[in-house]
Length: 339
Ligand SMILES: [Zn+2]
Image (cartoon, rainbow, N blue to C red):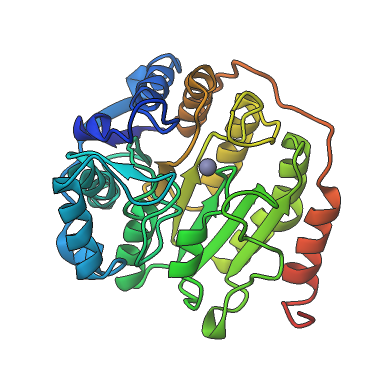
């Protein structure tokens, strides 16, 4: 298996300010993990271009994009207490969104089996009209919208520790995009409850598996076996997009989940075969412990190239089985009918 990685130097220049956890060293750590993964011969790199403005406007209104650029001209500036911009932030965000679109173009030409978007700022909290949670432009949503608009059936699986509220909102009424999220709950951004299942024609195409603090790879494996893999399989996606946040790692300061890099390798390794080669994209979202990012980068890059590199073994024990069973009842037994 071959992997094409898209990134850009501007992604290192977005600076939310001193002491902020979403810092440029995160990208360097994941990149180091990629280089340590033992699959260098299977990896190619490309420089991300600017996202096409029309593709951005398919997710975020033009006025919101203009305002983001204007705010960066007045930077440093806090959009909210978590989300701050520097002068290069909008340009970085436009490259971060462009990475996914460029990977689609390359995979359309069968250049690689898997595309990996190594970018920041992250995207999955960004709402159509509001930046939040360290996110400015919703990178994975821009790619998913582009694919759905040409008739693809897109499955998004979000394994960041936090609920991908922005992605969920963008596709909440849309049956052409399946959104599945596993996340700590209750926890920032305090959405992603079991009962959030989509609306209108999109009902049943949003699947949330909220997990309690302390959940390990055991709950995730159960959720994959009983909920995630069955609903993705039933959806028959033509493309699979993964929001890969590594902040569920047991060392991460921004969640109380107890995952290891071995667990992340298992999760990504189970998801990728759900669709054909060259129809698979992975997007970096969160992850704030540098050593954990190195290990998670190495483990998930290795499995993306169909190799094994497990700096840490899988975790086990802990809570969460009841929530998985509740999600299974809603989405596989009940068809959301009893909500
Ligand atoms: Zn996160």
